[in-house]
Image (cartoon, rainbow, N blue to C red; front, side):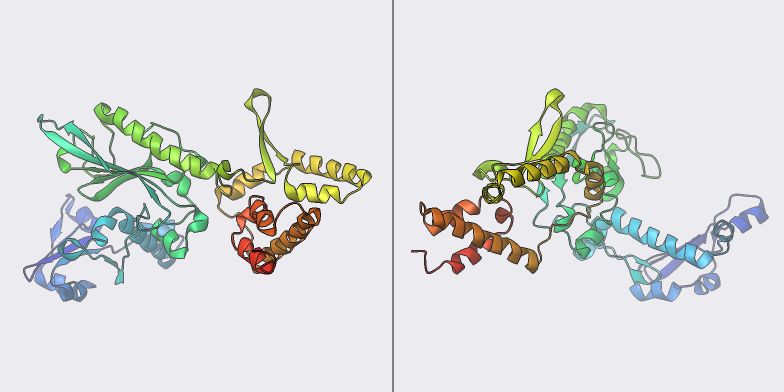
Length: 392
């Protein structure tokens, strides 16, 4: 590995060469001469910037053996892995403005910063940043800054958002604390034993910024890759963790369904049985269900009930859980589906009109409190437009 640094128009370079170490029988870092520096790959690219650092990896003898000779493919994988890690660990510097910004490249490809919190996404939930005072090893008071985030659902993310958080496939293992030392990310994706990871809390993340004066208090090693939360602030941080997890759980619990604050007429009911066991059943009082029931003979309805009970008893909960964990469940919002729901709405409005007890406006308003209509706000406008001649 070679490191070359350019400052004040002067380049210094040193190399850590295993073959050279074996030859000299000593652990030596070799300083390169000016001629050796000129011969380095990419050295002219470094000169173009005026100042900066070039890191070169060469002579991958071990990689040749471990990759079965597919060195280029292995290097491409390593290149992508390095770029992704750099984009995350140094994202504060890469995204900074002005003189604080640092530009980094891998094989001349500029690295774009990640954003593990999606701070600019309108559906990211944030809590107010707070500071926690802690004494360093010399008895001086220092400040730690803590800020919780809860990411949006995967269905609210476009491809660019997914890239910013490093993909959605590993959200579960990326939840937890994100600890920064002087703005550099040193550890992430752990709750430090405070809480276990779960599917419902996978979108919760807590940013913690600490100064380098607390290295010993946080048990930060020389590689700046591990840390331990000091006992004296664990209790204060625990409340922040519980708040972030609570928001994430609440969002996941009500995903795909609004809270029943407006007395929504749902198609499915969540029921609690013996031993606090939860099960789901079709809401027989749902307006769509009642409309179908009224059009059926008693014998036909008996057959329908038999079918519904079998559906309720054979819900593929395990597969639904797996698909939901992978965020592959998508609601059909196609034009065909919207038109299908609209036609059903027209049918139900006409049916309610036949009873002659309420205005069309009231019928539509009531209908929009029922699934599936409440899931498609555009249906209300379409129904009002369809009956505009009958609405005062």
